Image (cartoon, rainbow, N blue to C red; front, side, top):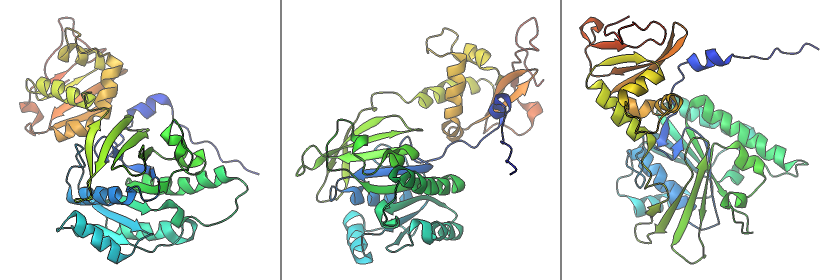
Length: 355
């Protein structure tokens, strides 16, 4: 039997690949990938999911989080069109045509993926797909290994999200037993929560209360707890507090520092150490060359939105961070360009001009 050779890549080459930065449907909260929103029955998960879909389709903020306008597909598999219409009118008088609904769909291994991909082909601007609920698309059976079954099912949806660079949000239930860690209350094995990119748990301290906490954790988002209150008139979960709101977002500071630098020169290429010396000569920011490079890579989209184009390249054995003001002139010869090369540095200091 012939064994397929491993497809490997060396670390140096991997660091040189200009991957497209991670895209967020909801900034700092819902990136592309597979996500799980779990809560007890009738707690208000579907109201939250519907409002999220509206915000994304309209490009309006979700609480304090900006959204990226996109088309949205909401599979409401426990509802009827009549009930969805009623809920829409409770939330808005002006629902956008970019928000699409379906109340019936095939099961996960019997055509659902193909149905979603057909929709994505017809609506290429789609950025978010919500499936309410996960259990509705799973076949009923007695698996000998529930963990393997959970992991396999989630893996299919994860592959779908990654393949099309969209966010897929699964609505799910909690166990009845309480736990100090809300994530342990997600129904099913750890094959579900472990295979997703982010998990959100909506939990009330008491059943009859209008307040709840949304616990948020994931690979690409910071852990946070959002204190919410459900408004019975607007049917919207209002934000009371955010456990992360007092913390300045790292990319906001990086954008500020690099914007100030590019006001002096429209383009610069430098290793992280030399770039750090330019933006923080006194060392008050608490950054290291490695942490600066890491923050710049994580802030590529925020920098782009602020008019700064970021790229990375190698020169004379060193790795350069290349920054360019997007509103600069196209003629490179007319620009004031600074290149700081880690190897080919002149004895008299840093030279200006293209190298």
